[in-house]
Image 1 (cartoon, one colour):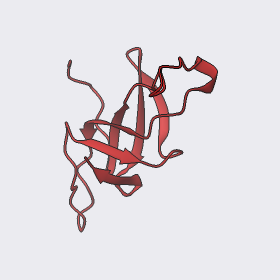
Image 2 (image 1 turned 180 degrees about the vertical axis):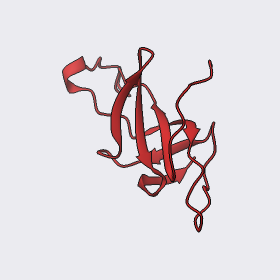
Image 3 (image 1 turned 90 degrees about the horizontal axis):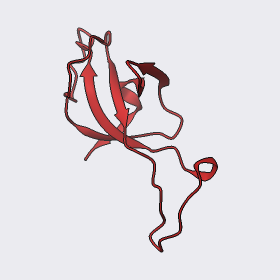
Image 4 (image 1 turned 30 degrees about the vertical axis):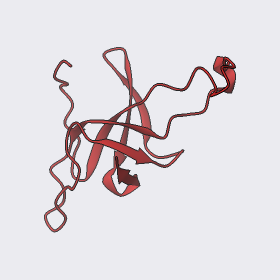
Length: 92
């Protein structure tokens, strides 16, 4: 993976969402209009944290987050989410 020139501030993280599922467990192909927004992704950049709250996640962690967490953005042709560390539910 190429190094990103994005540095989140304070307690924010930059997440690359996992690709949406294209087939169900039974093999049915899901059309683009019906695909669920993924709720997990890989952290690609982290902020330095707050003075009294150090960051607990690090680059490379796979995390679970809320369905509507973060703000979507595009950078160098890829989709990312930027969110606060408190929007992350778990590291998997």
